[in-house]
Image 1 (cartoon, rainbow, N blue to C red):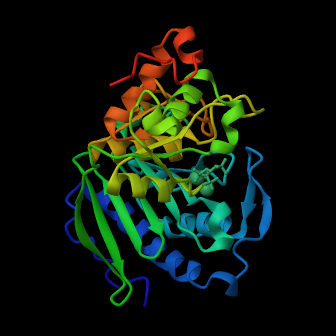
Image 2: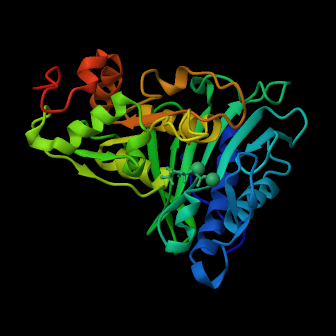
Length: 334
Ligand SMILES: O=P(O)(O)OC[C@H]1O[C@](O)(COP(=O)(O)O)[C@@H](O)[C@@H]1O
Ligand SMILES: [Mg+2]
Ligand SMILES: [Mg+2]
């Protein structure tokens, strides 16, 4: 299969420059998907360095970043911001777009053959490189992710709904697989419970009440999932509902959670909202927040709207109510 071969995505009705960038990213994703499938035959999971935030970089993190950067040469992208690069990097002078990317999300899953992904956000470029990215997520022209799982798929929003394209391994084309709408009811939550003791009281109270199931104020049982791959978690929640939380916690360096605003939280928030869901930092919509730094972290709560709004309501509860054992917490009894 050659890079020039048709990538599909034929019905991408949008500004031609945005469409060109998305097709370029899809072409890189097709190639990355092929390399990821080789798994242990290549040493993708080896730690090869550290990024500006002190996160370890795996070989595949850098392979993905370099592949995207190389493919964008000559594309209508003026500024390139990546999880794997300290600063914004100039690409095509005077071009109309800015691209922020998490080239490889969920890298702790590389070695264990679990789903990983690429997350991207396309914004209008401004003359100032940083100002192009430090703005409300509502100004994104497009956002998407590629999931490399049992199937490789592209989930994309251009601001009018969220849609799925699946990579057909036989033809190498991304074929349309329909619009996505988050189910409005679900009993699943996703959070890394090993951090329980570090959470603030409202988050503990919310999870306590889920864990209490039908013996607690929610009067029903819940199920839990944690893949440790934001893309995989998003794909599951967009497909069958539920809620994801990566809150701030008391560990050093986690006072704004773990996930990065510009190239993780903002694009996921746009995809989720456009699929009929909600995304907040626990209280306020992610898409209304303005990041102050390129690699800034933001607490992230997203999924089925009624659940996301319930988490915000726990943050508004009086302290005595939040601190009460679930058995005595009365406000949310149905
Ligand atoms: O290991 P933890 O603390 O549960 O964090 C898992 C989270 O970290 C991430 O892996 C961070 O993304 P990267 O792999 O791109 O650094 C998310 O995909 C995932 O939701
Ligand atoms: Mg990530
Ligand atoms: Mg990453």
